[in-house]
Length: 102
Image (cartoon, rainbow, N blue to C red; front, side):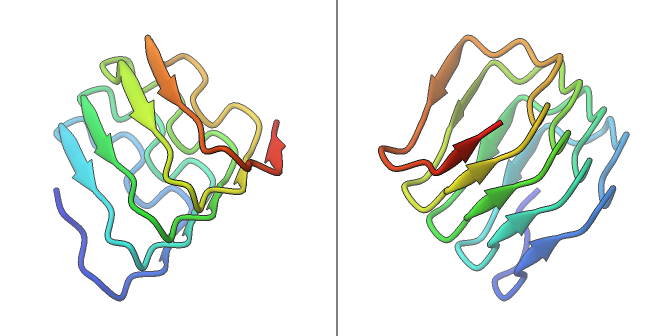
């Protein structure tokens, strides 16, 4: 699923438990992924986060069982508690200047 340019916030629980989602591409206009936005989306395998993203709120991708890797763009400054809890991440690429990783 590719989201439209101009979108700035993925709202709280926007896609929670949408098990049909397999891939997500966020436009560079998204600054915030709010709490539980993609939580329990057990079918998600790939997530493309682009420059512009600054904050990933708590439990945003909690229990996304099929997600094995994530790369954060250099613009990410904050990753909150349990953002990726219960994911089976094998590869994580963090930006060089992250201010808060809870």
